Image (cartoon, rainbow, N blue to C red; front, side):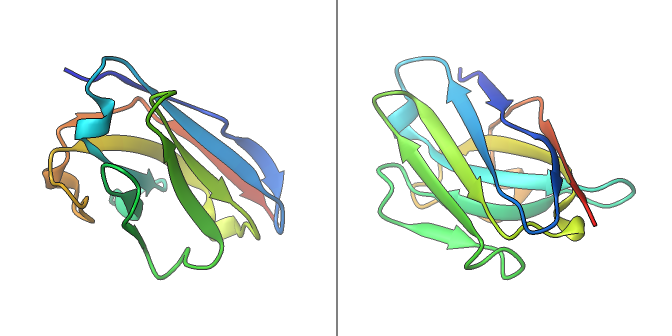
Amino acid sequence: QVQLVESGGGLVQAGGSLRLSCAASGRTFSTYAMGWFRQAPGKEREFVASISRIGRRTVYADSVKDRFTISRDNVQNTVYLQMSSLKPEDTGVYYCAATSVVSGSNITVAYDYWGQGTQVTVSS
């Protein structure tokens, strides 16, 4: 079992930056690939980025490519999402998730564990 706790969300102006963190419990963190998803009001949860178990492979949604960076620290049991050049359309609740798929995945059903989410609001 893995428990995930996100932090770092908040209110930021367009063009600004935020860094989200997701702390994982347990000693099996490095056996899971990790992903970030987001959900805007009235919309489905969508893929943002994923990172493989030891961080060699990262995948990004086209909408965040070149603006967001996913990384992980397997000693600190934490995955990060560095977000820059934020836009109002980046607003939503951001969730981290863990999957046993080695290289990660861009679909929600592949993920076994989810955090409670952290709100990101980008004002124009």
